[in-house]
View 1 (cartoon, one colour):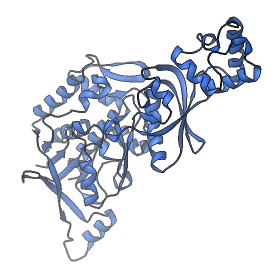
View 2 (cartoon, helix red, strand yellow):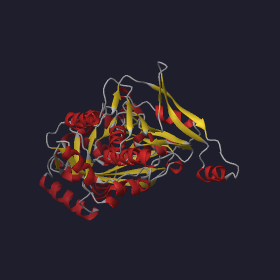
View 3 (tube, one colour):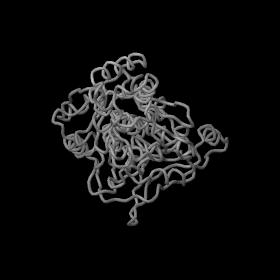
Length: 433
């Protein structure tokens, strides 16, 4: 009987273990924390956004970190498969705004518990508090006098074979295949501390520098921090590097005591982190009225100014902006808040409209990677077979989930990627033997 060792009992690891067991393998699932699925329990604010109903191409577009690499495993195991999988485990799902899929119960614990129960029913040996320290390998030696096997090895680039793992307490587990699904470096309290990347480097793999993704951004501007707690809807944020726009997002955002957060900021944070890491000057520009052109906005200001012509300008804008945001906007337009509305010139009104369409702030950094929802970077996907998830360097070694250089936006895309990769690794870890 094939024996598969899976390291990491997160979404990718549990799915891999389930699929390997369904294919008749003897499976050992090792988790260094005291229980499986710790990070899953906090995803989707504790509700677990397990996937998204978007079409395959849309799924890939929403995984900016090497989404195209996932084409084969998404084709083999897609979002409909994920929903059916949980339905058969007694966890019906529902679709919410943006195509997000949640369990009907709104409880992440139901998702984790259902997977754990399935592991037990399939006879998977789940061992918690098991800290793996090393992937065990052996050299692949050619046999036979004709050198044919050696030629095949050279073609496949496999010079080693994974044969098991070693734990911190000295225990060893041997297997025909080893699947590494230890996550990235975000939320280390859940067990994601970059172990898989370190093992990969020791075995000759290239690891793309790991940076925070889906993470709040810190700003230099004090006025931003003074707006702590203010949430904005239907705004557009543009990310600039050295003065050039590289991306923009429309939706909701939040001001915090350190800078900015919220859905559109998180979606832009991956690129912000990469640009900052290169030492570039990074800014965020807010369009507070994206539905209006400059001309329409100027006309709107003119109407409001006529309505409040005898008021101070800070009161003349109360129909246009949240109260706390008015003075920062006026300051950026070089207008004193106590100026009478009727004294504002056409040129000053035009400048005010420009600020409303382009309110700048300097991004000084991201929050620490430990606070990021996901990690950008990881094991280079060029060294992984996209169909099987097997290493191109080490025979019988598979990677799945956030350990790889794969990351997506919020909305269920990251968990779908984890489940698809886990399913591929679990299946092929048995089929390849």
